[in-house]
Image (cartoon, rainbow, N blue to C red):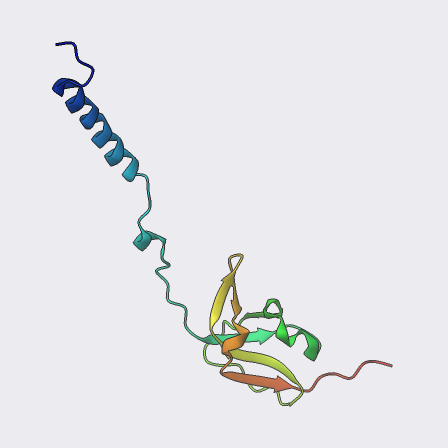
Length: 113
C-alpha cells in the first residue's frame, strides 16, 4: 500500500492547506478597517491667494479654525472665505470647490503703480 494518494497523505495535505489559509487570512485587513472613522462635514476655509485667478485652486485655501464663521470681509470682488465640503489631499484638509455653499468676499487690491 505504497500509493501516492492514500488517505493518510490526503489528510495531512488538507491540514497543511487549512492551516495556511487561516494563517494568511490573519494578515489581511477587512474592508471595515480601511474606512475612515471620521465623518467630514462642511466647514469654513480661508482664501490665502492675492488675486481672483487663484480662487479656483483648492491649494490656496486653509481650514478656518476659529469658532463660528469668519467675519464678512466687506467687498464683492474676491473671496476671503468659503463654506464647503472638506477633502484630504496629502494629509492636509482642503475644500472641495464643487460643493461651495457660502462665500465671504473682499475688494481685490489694485496693482501698485
